[in-house]
Image (cartoon, rainbow, N blue to C red):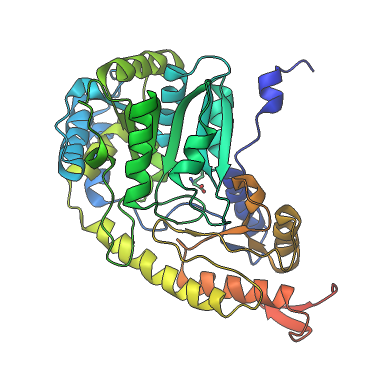
Length: 405
Ligand code: GLU
């Protein structure tokens, strides 16, 4: 087989793969608890369904402009004006097949071969691979103090002559940490000073807890939008629980947005027409589902923290938002891949190994599922790792006897 070097160097998205693993095991009747997934369980908002089905019922489903239908762009403009206090024009907006394609198109639009892209570690699994797909070189920066938030200085120290862009994701996948206003302000300032692009991945921006307000990165930018190298990414996937529709978008200066649209015109022709109408429906519709989801997630977070806090030997950082926690299990097993495989094999709990996010010893545990699944999942993990626990338990009606440790 003569696959390209690129194809051989790109790693599969483990987060997506584990969704399949969990689904296959469930199909076989295995009592799987999926704490690996990154999608809310709530249903698609009714306004999205109505908007989508009305275009489906028309039977007139044709190509759209590669950067999105005017109705969706109008809805995105309104969203941007409301949540970012920024007046933007249609030429500043490109709708994509999920946030993923928006980030990918942005990277292709701005990177030349060997250009470097910096992002804090832990990072979302797809950033390094996307940078590589766009011909660039990923540079992950870890906080020296072992926390999930490097300092502005640590990021600035990584900037070199090849650095072209920084990606920030706040609240962060996988840690749930929301970077401070000072940190985001510092990174915006750094990018403006060094003429770097800043890709602000705001996928989880609205899903924040403990009375926090979402941070608006434009608050710190002194540049006019057309001079700005700030590209803000959003999507309907998480805040409206519409992962399957695959609609995201980017807001940026018209030159980069035009380039991204041209790239999409050759790659996909643009996002699927019914999905665009669904996203427009969600953005224009009643917004209470976001707050309902946020409250559910905050409650799930609290319960998960109680359980993990009582788990001896596990170090946990309280997530500020999103629906991921990233506890450190290295007191039990330093190799996160081995640990995740062990937990899947022995107690049928799916987690994502920290290695995939650039941090060994950790597991990503999602808390977007049902409370019962979250608490039982943690119980199973605890039983599997605690040598003093009873030697047998019942799991999904089956007797499990410890044959390890
Ligand atoms: N973003 C989600 C996750 O991290 C969904 C899967 C993906 O696109 O990576 O689990």
